[in-house]
Image (cartoon, rainbow, N blue to C red; front, side, top):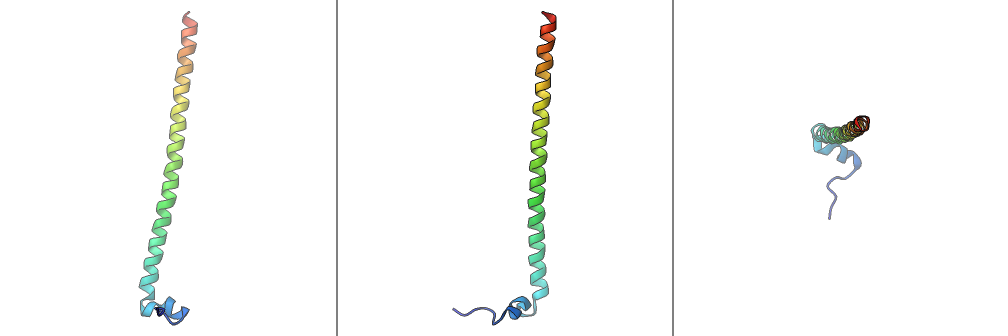
Length: 72
């Protein structure tokens, strides 16, 4: 099996299409990084929302229990 490029310089030059090839690679990697970071941010927001809802429900239960004690 023969290598596609004779040297690293030829590899990075991509047969004269280096600008387009490496631009496409860069856009793809940047997009994937952006998607990954957005997913992490959404996960953090979702966990925070769940914690807020659970805390609210706990406060409601405590208030209801406290109200029932006062009426007895």
